[in-house]
Length: 186
Image (tube, rainbow, N blue to C red; front, top):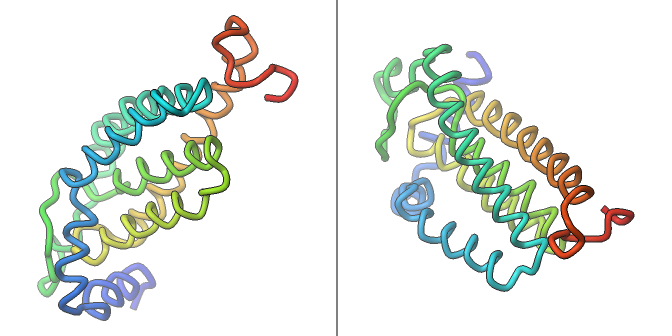
């Protein structure tokens, strides 16, 4: 059995229990996370100082660029079917749409984890734990293959690093009052 299929079944069927049946659809829901992300971005802007505002801006730009690019360029071009579309016994616990590869949930949350780890490094483990939990939830609810999640996480991590590079370059050229740190320390 291919590793992708084995891992999918290990999570989708093997981890089945009444608690996860309630928790994982909640964890995977963008409707649940939107207000949490909005509150987090607002907190970064209001109390995060200059670095927090730069982080919030990078997260917004990151999602506004990467999410539709992934959706309309990668997913539509690759056209990979979701597990529930090809396997007869998937335990589908959530809705989804479009192609399967890459997972935009994984992409967006990995990108956010990179940026939040830069902004609040003491909490890096929390950002990655949240991202990983959301990523695993995509398998549990039956809407992604493991390789979709790994691919999305890799793209999101790379995109997060591109955004950090851009932030460092911008920090060196904006007026002093707008910088998140002195240019020699960035």
